[in-house]
Image (cartoon, rainbow, N blue to C red; front, side, top):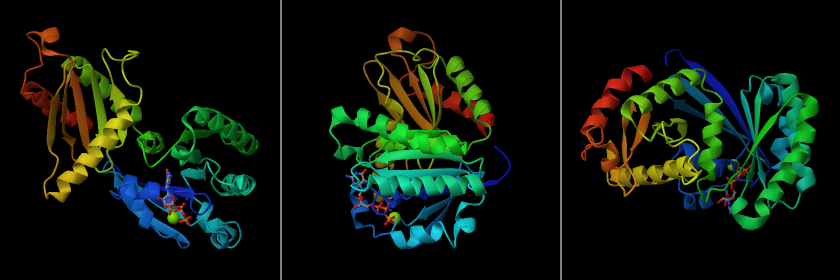
Length: 311
Ligand code: GTP
Ligand code: MG
């Protein structure tokens, strides 16, 4: 994971759609409750975030009040839309001004086409918690169809997510966004797969250390297992991130965590300076004589041995 690279991410969308909230939760350890005290963003707020050691995410959180948006599309357009790697457009699904929201999206796409035609485009249909559970997919599909109609003529394919700060959905979306920026993803994926096979793990999951976003996961046995919760990765991100925050309030740091359940044991440990790994082992009796000891010392040794693959 050597070399250094800066990636510009534009966070766009109308005022109040939730841009600064999600940024603060994922990158600045805010809880969902903390976001209520955020004020409207004035102009553009820049954050520079180290990610996986070698990558710097330059997050441009663009205030969404009309006066600022007008400037992005006129006097500032070159400055805003040049060298963009990723556009993350946030929509408030409960917005009463849908036509205006779409108009802003279309203008973003037009400018992106001019200044950063190779950028990736993600749309987050946000505040889904405010919609009835049984209506969410329908709302999402209808909106995605409309947005695609606006993006495709400009040569962009878009990826969309339903998100809310009140559940783990935000982690899934942001994991996909940052993973799209990691250049050596295939190598990471292959190393993790080998690690899972050699350790005879049910599953191995790689997390970025500060955000706890999932970078990759591999499985020797769990793939396609319908009994497993498909949202398990983002749920773990959410739970461990909250746990880490509790640890830091008590002036301690999460270093290693072992959990024993009926069906498996999970070991969470530092892998490299920038990553944590979670190794899920089958129950002991299913694994007699192999790697699943109670205190996890064999797993810890395996993790240590695998470290150099991921450095
Ligand atoms: P500007 O800076 O003016 O462009 O707004 P913004 O897009 O940054 O909005 P901000 O993050 O400040 O959020 C506005 C309000 O929406 C805050 O009170 C948040 O608590 C709330 N909010 C953010 N995300 C969600 C969500 O997923 N669900 C619900 N119900 N409220 C949310
Ligand atoms: Mg804001």
